[in-house]
Amino acid sequence: THAAAPDDRLATAVERARRATVGILAQTPEAQTSVDPSRIEIRGTGVHLRDGYIVTARHVAEREEQGRAVISEQILILTADLHELPARLTGVNTFLDLAVYRVDGDSRAGLASATPFAEKEPDPGEEVFTVGYPLGWGPAVAYGRIGNPKTFLPTVETRLLQADVSVCSGNSGGGLFNARGEMVGVVHAVIQTEQIQGERRCSRFAFAVPGVLAQRIVTALIQGTQVSFSRLGIRIANVKVGTRWRASVADASGPALAGGVQKGDLLLAIDDTEIRDAAQLKNYLIERTVPGQQVTLRVLRGDREVQLPVTLGRS
Image 1 (cartoon, one colour):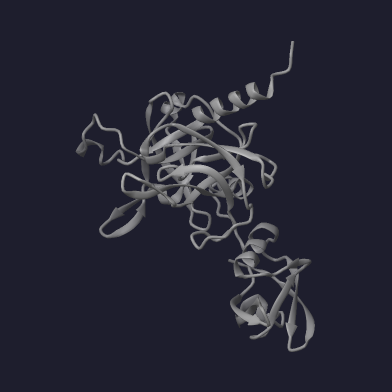
Image 2: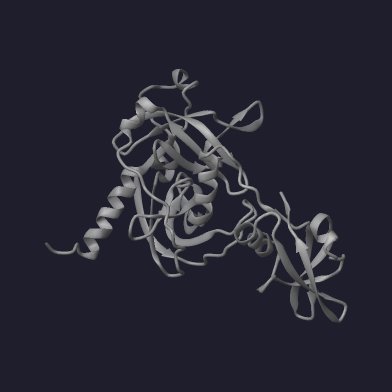
């Protein structure tokens, strides 16, 4: 026997990911009778993880109801083999814009494949691919590379993986996969730069929730629990010191106040990690701490550095 060539392994990984990818239909089971049954409209993408569980982006599962956005309790998915299956909500997490649904037991035979989360973070420059339903069409496969793995957008409370991969409206909720077909991220957003059919909906600026974080949230939702994040109790303002913008304490409460943090302190580091801005601090708390853990804040107060031990609370 001969080992599979790299191209063969990638082709196998892409095929497995393609078969694990599902389209999230625009109509719900409740509204299905009011639409043209011959028309298939796909609004987003999802991925079958295991045992009928489908992960997608929370905003893909939202619908308008009496002028406000609500999460659909039931959705319809379309598999790569064109099975249309109902799925019921397991749970959502607004922090990371994730939702988990589960296909009913009798229908799970229509799910042809599943895919695991990757255990290792992707490196900058690493080759990745995504499978999804851009503009409602697909499943389509696009290839690219990881750019900045520590990007921040105001749409979620965590860092995102930036990838140079072609995506459009409709790719949200799909998987970002490494060359082994393991999911390294869940597509969250697109910075729209290209014009399609008169609308700016496609781009090579894709952003995904890191797989290591998504797995933590998904596991908790499947187990019926909510992940607790650490609370520090600092509201940050950016101030200019010389030519550099620094993170300054605009207000301290809860754990930070109890630990001695004062308004006007310049934040230098948490433990051994430099604090550059509010997003980076928040991400450190989410990824590297748990409620009840003690951290050391290093601040600049006037012209002297102060180290403050703070016991984190629960958000």
